[in-house]
Structures are given as structure tokens and as C-alpha cells.
Length: 396
Image: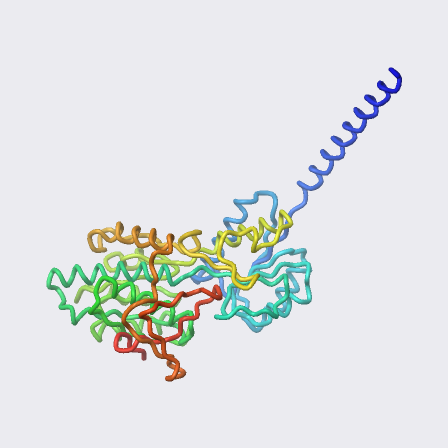
């Protein structure tokens, strides 16, 4: 009996040693493996939109040191995305991120079911026909627009109270890229933020029909300033509007709210603050999911739409307010902004709500009454608000 006992003990000890050796070998072998991650940029880091996306790439390297290898391709046109995708996959990429709006991306995902395809969303409705390995994501930018509108409204209110302008002169301008849902949603949220402080304010919008053109953006900004706009904002990608404000500021008081980048270096006497989408939380989370063999949408913190589409706002740091100009902004602006952000995190503010009516510029019969409110990003991470507020916003 004693022999059997001794034999069992020896056998168990041997098994433990063998398992420990195997586990040590597996850990060393697994630690040597890296996940190859690919990034495809429609521009490069000289454009604020792609630069913001590249911040996520840099953060990824810091989050997973030694665990990821990053490959990237820049200045890839939407119509030419196929080549870089295939090249990155042949180089070993297991997950890809693209910040362009290419329709080819999801089709390519079907060819490579073992690779995760992540793309910035651009459709107001989630498709149910996309492959399981195709994912879309975007920060709820309207929240940042609304907050920056509040800051602009506080500056206008200060000027009205100091009798620098009359309430009827509370005119804001907006340099917009294209007449699409994403842009319309953004400038409407900005205006509603302004109007929450200055109900008399009106807004003029001018389209450039390009995402990034310094001369066009600056020209539109100068025209709006010449027409009497006091505060400008933008959904465009250059410093043109901020430079225009700074140049005019020697003649009259005008101010600027930026997007994607801080404008304080080029407009120190006119820039109030800027807002941007923060792509980093999703990028880090999606890669973490792949490293741990989990589904992206169950791993990343955010709102899931239709299974493979995600969005979030200030609550998950997917939207941020950038550098605040305390020397230019109205007194109390920073505290007010923090309070609005806190309310947005709690869901206690409905941005698209008020005694106003909106009309679809492409279909006059498509009308929305905002007295009951409208929930943006309810069905997709891409904005869907596409109505122009009558009597308050004029578009050229």
C-alpha cells in the first residue's frame, strides 16, 4: 500500500513539473508573438483629421508595448483602397483600421474572414448585409459641437451685456464641407448650443464642397465675417477660418471655435476652444479584443448599433474639448462647459430639442418638429440629422 502511495506522489509531482515546463514554454513562445495592426489613412498627419486618427496609432504602441507591430499607409484615395488592404494583409495584419469612407472596404472584408476590418462609419443606417468581421465606429461629435456652441453663446451674451452688439446682431457663421447628414448634424448642434444661451442668435452656413482647402475655407470665413458674423465655427480641415478671424480682429471683435485641432497658436486673440473626436479608445479596445480572442463590440465600452457598429460621446472619452483660451472666452465659460459635459454624460440633455421646425433641403415634404426632441446616433454611429432649422439657419 505504501508503494502505491509513493508511486502516486511521484507521478503527480512529475505531472506538475511537466505542466509547469509546458506552461513556461507556452508563455515564452506566446510572448514572442506580436499582433500586426494595419492603418490606412485617406490623408497624412499634416491634415488634422488624419493626425487625430494617428494619435490612436501612437497610443496603441504605448498601450501594448512589444505586443503589436504597426504598419500604415497614408494618402490613400477611397477608390484606391484595395491595393493597400491586400498589401497589409499579405504582410501579416490581423486587424485593419481605415479612416476613409470607401465602399470597397466592407466588400474586401468578405474575402478575408480571418481579418478584422474596422472603418469610420459614414452611413446613417446600419447595414445588416455586412460580413461578421466588418466593424464601424465613430464618436458622437454632436456633443462636442453643442458644448462649443455653448461657449460661443456665452461670448455673444457677454458682448450683448456689455453693449458691444445688440441681440439682433448675434449672428454666427459656419464653414461647412458638404451638405451631408454628418455636417448638417454638426452645425445644427453647434447652433442649438449657441441658442441655449442666446435665443435671439441666428446662423449662416456656407459650403466649401471640399473637406480640406485652406483658400476656400478662408474665403468663406471672410465673407461671413464681412456679412456681420461675430463667431465662426467649422466642419472643415484647415486653419483658414481661424486665420481669417485673427486678421479681422484688429478692425472688430470676432471669435472662432475650431474643430479637430487647437487654433490658439494661429488665432491667440480670437480662438475660444476646439472640439474633436477621440479615436483612441476604440482603437485600443478593438486591438485588445483581438489579442484576447474576444468580439470587439463586447470588449469595447460604447453604444452598439446593429451588432457591429459602435459610438460613444463624452461618457467614454470618444469626444473631447481641446485647449481652452481663458484669456478670450467669457467669464465662467470653463465651468459652464464642464457642467454641460457632465449633463451630456448623464444623458440629461437632449441636444436636438426646441420650439423649432426643420426641413430636409432635398425634400421639402420631409419636416421635423423638434418640440418632442430627436435622439442623434440612436441607430448608427454616423449622424442622421439632416434637416435645416427654418427661420434660424440660412444656408448658401
